[in-house]
Length: 75
Picture 1 (tube, one colour):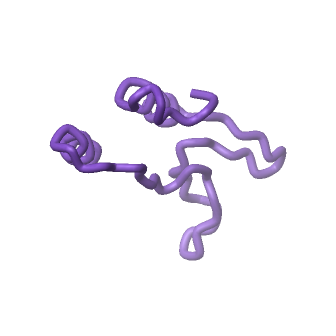
Picture 2: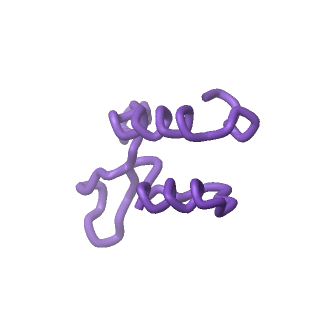
Picture 3: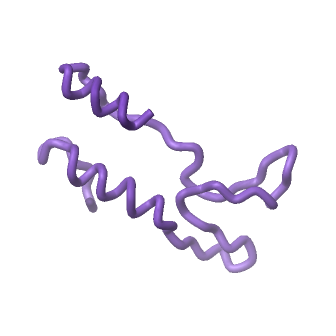
């Protein structure tokens, strides 16, 4: 879907954001803590968070594609 999002913005659609599922590893009702698909790994015992390569990918995508005035702070 990111390709279509890029296409839409190039065609002038005023895209303000998109959602990822999921930012953090979390509890899933059907799978408990066994399925890990957040872009940030969570060690549930220590609560330490570690960005995965996918987090770096999205950060770099935002840096590259966002107009300077629209970039979130910290990027």
